[in-house]
Image 1 (spheres, rainbow, N blue to C red):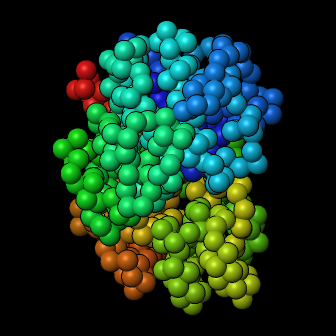
Image 2: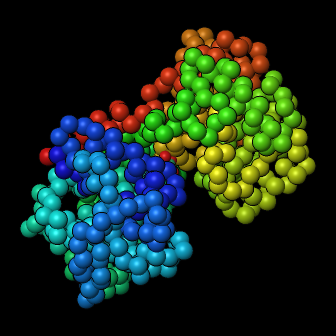
Image 3: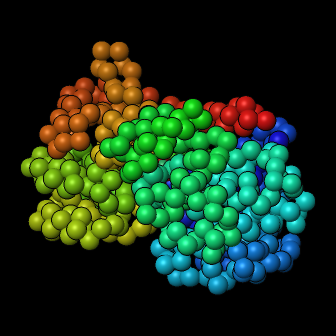
Length: 476
Ligand code: GLC
């Protein structure tokens, strides 16, 4: 099976969020299956071009038509020994050599170009993919462009569109249809939504299979509270909708080998290992060196849908408890300011790092006892999986992928991996934290069970990759 995987970002080349992790790990996991070959397409951003660690070879040079325009397209391939996973980079400095990868005035045009250039590249390569897997708004125009312009050559390919986050849908002006996409008016109703064109709507209508990154989020996408205006459209297409929960790359995120940790450990040695990591983290963050006090960690974008409103409230309350809190991340000024205020009044309890530092991120996952993740909406969430894998017990809001992956700990049966709350409300989150701390302080055997259950839960890409393959096969 030949699979094309198209995304606006993929680690280790370029990453702004969870999509970048998925677009790294899922193609790799798929390519390890027998008889599967994967071609991953990314824009050749200036940030990748200037990275001396990424060696490339030029494959072709041609023009990509965008309505009346002919846009230069360089097709590069990353030099690698992996025969079954090829990484292709689409070059055009005018579109992709910007200070930022998203957030430009002409993002619509930039990513329309990217989607069309992928299809042109497939023609140049003589490739005949069975599946073209598109992700989020950046590649949401691809299915419609495939139908409109490439039926003769690529018509056998089936398209899968995955929604990683409905918050960002891709909007442009109605004139874009003819002026940039060069599509005839009959396509207007496929893309038109309210007073503009909506890329995601186009993909939802045009794709052969629609997926999202957890089963619960698939249900939530049909609910106006979560779906940012799209619930009606998604409900109409729910016959082709499914949810496949993400995994994490358990090779590069392994507490046994993670080079960022002062001490490596696994499920057998975690007690001593985590104790050392906790002490080192307290020292690094300038918190009192106390093995007994519960350390609560969070690594997150500081934005509303990550639950920052109740997070800020709860942290103020936590300053009255005997706990330590460590937060790492950047985001909206409003939350940064609120957290800074709390941190400056409680330097002995609360460490706030307003930046992104992947070494410290690993050390927070390893050195904390609890991981706090009260997201208002969370399509899948990867942090709770990392936390579990590093032996840190998650406390989460029971929605989206958090509901599917964090099974509540039950002291009677010893099953479960974390603590959850149902209503997005400060008191409910505090109650979940209280229950967690009661077990942490009062019932060490039970705490050990929760930690071990998390560390041994299968959070790898093995099972999800199989589910994607089954889905692809069902389309062929
Ligand atoms: C988005 C979602 C997150 C998900 C990730 C990868 O960032 O917000 O929940 O884990 O995509 O699918």
